[in-house]
Image (cartoon, rainbow, N blue to C red; front, side):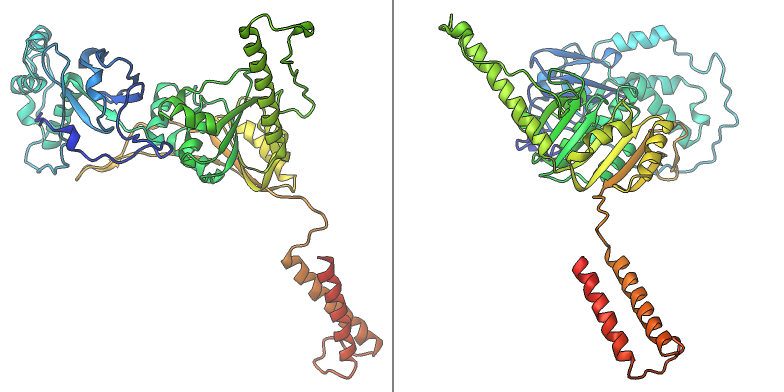
Length: 477
């Protein structure tokens, strides 16, 4: 495998994290990173100690401080030796394979196809200065069936050996697709089986825009919250409702590397008891007990801090009850219809309601209830389906292994149920009906067929009657 050293300081980097005002495209101290290993496995790390090393198992180790200030998205090779040095691996271009007369029909897989033993391969790996490409080349030269393979089989053979012996990694860009894909493959139950395509559909339904205000009920490790913050671009307000009395932790959000100050400005949290209108929080007093002096400055600071916390909670509850929230995102273990009904009075008109569940029947029950309520416009229940493709010259085909389901999504729009409101179309039909009824009454009084095209001097009276009715309808609107 050919590699070339590259000066990282000369590489322009495109920003990958729109929610940060700083240069989020370069790795900083205390940043979370996702590394893709040659086998395709994804692992997450945090850059804490510049002089410390990151252990990648059989794929080697390196000094983590070498990544500081470098862009995301680069591939690196761990150089031979125990010094832990790395260098950038230049990406290989897509190449077409030439068809030859070779076939795989003469290949005989036996015990003596690869005479290179396991002990010999381990000896090569432990030899100082031996590159992984030399180990792969030695296996190719010893393989008696290699020359009988087609060009496609040879290419697949090389990639399998590189995935097994190459020592290196790729720093994955912290986009929401990569973060969701990482968590879905690592722990799908933790994120409620939400695939990247399912998450994108939910974000499309909720229509998140910078400056919006949204409510999130997220029991998926913070996946919905992270996607919403990514869409808001640093401008907006997000209220999370959880079971926790203390501020919740969302491990998925950490991978976005959001500055702490920006996160605290955008995200606030309440629990289910605090969003109840009948909830009465206990407001502690900042005065010293029994009206006497403070025993110490620590006691005074502690009491003032409690009162400030209580006042902040009251202000946050008032912000919630003031309503006009632009959307609701739900991925919870609770009954979805109960959650929606609880939050519904505080949503703005035309706000989107999006609910995810890995189970169909849970959302079917909520869907049937919402269909009966006129305050929910166009409720729909869908299941996302994803088919990944391998795209290579002459070898484009769907990937054979795929996940069964990414869950189900229920979405609707809030509308105001006003029995006195008349739509324009309904008013036009009502106006036409009244005109025909007025003309029919005039014609019957004159003993004239109402379908006739002949107008007499009495038609003016019908027109005046229709105009009066029209005025009544307009005034009623």
